[in-house]
Amino acid sequence: MNLTKNKVSVIIPVYNSEEFLIKSIESVLNQTYKNLEIIAIDDGSTDNSLNILQQYSDTITVFSQTNRGLASALNAGIKQMQGTWFKWFSPDDILYPYAIETLVDEAKKFPENTIVYSNWELIDENENVIRTFNETNYNSLNSFDFNVRLLDGQQINVNTTLIPASIFKKGCSIQEIKDPVAIDYDFFLRVGLLYDVNFHLIPKILVKYRIHKEQLSHKNITKTLSYIEELRSEILSNLDDSDKKKYLTALKKYQKEKPLRRKSLEKGLKLFSMVLPHQVTDKLLVFYLNKIRRSR
Image (cartoon, rainbow, N blue to C red; front, top):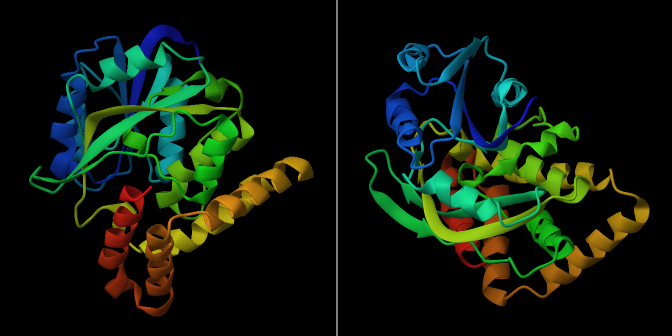
């Protein structure tokens, strides 16, 4: 991986994404920041996705592979990228035109081990804005305290992030895990706790995140919630006993001191995930998760 100064490598993993793919690609091509390379990896799509990608072959680099999953597609793109920064972007979301320029301008202010991320809008299939997500601003926290929030379940919308490519030169990679929905959470926990990466919020809306009926991240969400506990334990097991104990003690203290309203929301989320069938609970759980995020 030969890195080119200030270039942003936008990697788009694609699987059966024909419905929204053109608008997603166009939103990247129309960025005010022009020092980009766009790499799309078609992961064995059976719809028209690959044909759409090939129509853009003069402006983006297209790779095709048999279906191996999200992590494989991302890592294939990471191996090819030449940018200073990696931008993971989903093929159904939309970047505001100034998104990457804003991310780069902010990233330049910090050491290279910093991931910057932003606020975002939730849109429906017709691009109507459902709600705005203003992430809790933890910029004043040190890295240890931020990692405690990550362990507690703090989510970062990966489509808003700008990630230093140097992380991958240190040996980090996107992990193949049992539940692909949790791949980004696993990555953030891993880089925060094991690779000394910091996080910084840009309090601006840079991305339109689309929610739709075929979206992987909103299918069988109860399974994902239970699996996240397993991820936390596995990552903590890579720390020495002293550091692991410090994190578990701080996490317990943080959870004990949460506001009553948030504790109630989280208790309701856990209860619904345990007692109701998956097909009944998924929409309800998405509602609860959104409420919890907004209460952070």
